[in-house]
Image (tube, rainbow, N blue to C red; front, side):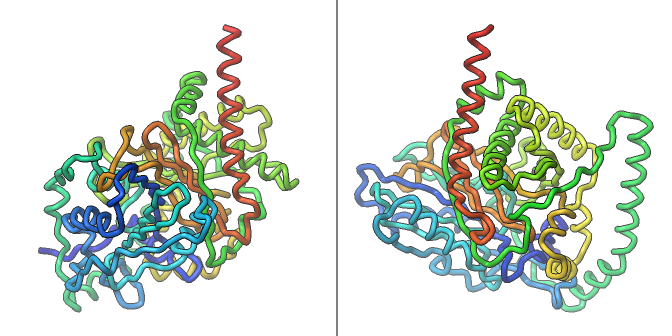
Length: 466
């Protein structure tokens, strides 16, 4: 059996980690046991542990290449112990949502131990409503957002008293390769470094060829690179993180989607755009040019639910320079559709070029470039992403999952990350921020709610006219 090396898509998550950059994601899972007074940490640990133990990836750790000159390898952790990955903590009184956000942020700001499997779970008790929460952390090199969504199907039940779901053999049968022999590791590294200039040249040539072909055929018109305006939150980030969270009605989002003939993701981008626009107008800091984001475009084939990273990124406008909310939504939808088509036709983004580099070079570039310059190179002021979760209510050990609030990665130069998960009729937003760069972040959540109300009011008004 051959050694299992990480894929090029993972290089940013490995080489991009630094003292002030965390390359793990987290999900703040709100649980309520209802009348099940026996639900506690031990029951949760038993329910989760028995299922995670059946998924081989959760027993793998990294074997890193000296000097980070090549991607690391996955190997079995011979000393794997569940107790190293399950922890508990209690909220200070009064146990409200702000206290929970502060504790979750504190727990997030700790790097995962690379000598062990790259995940951990915190059981948080003491919530004011009698419920509890889980903070599930895992390194981004393990899986993308859709892979994490697939994990929910493994961990949770669809009824309070259901038996644990069967785990697909395609997941339980995966094995990590052996630790590479020193000669094999050195040879692979040498071949990678030797071939690097040729790979870069091939990517540049392919990019030029596609641009020429698309310009003449017009089958896929080239997209001009738009400027990324400077903002107060596009700067060097620190080590601290903050979390604010809230939920919106999925039915209202879908109603808006249907009314304007766009997609759910495009409505979400418009809602985010309106919130950011109002937030910056209140501070007299809205740039004349539109803010930009890059969206994750899934390259997964249909029915692919493996735990891995299979995405690329494309830059799109947030149309914050447009005052009218309908015109703003139309501008976002038009450019988003162009971006997705470009990605599926092989257009390369910044991510593809980064994937050619060894981790050491990625780490070096992140350390040398100032934050605002990185934001400009990446083509985005802010990251916005969405993941589709379960349409039905889920349970863990009999406790109902009330909500799932994601907490995601801040890239150098980007003080805001907005990620959302749809679940059981709502869209749950988690906004990760650098608290030194983003004052009064809870107003962003208020802005999301206000923005959706504007769109639903427009839908009602136009229906009455028709």
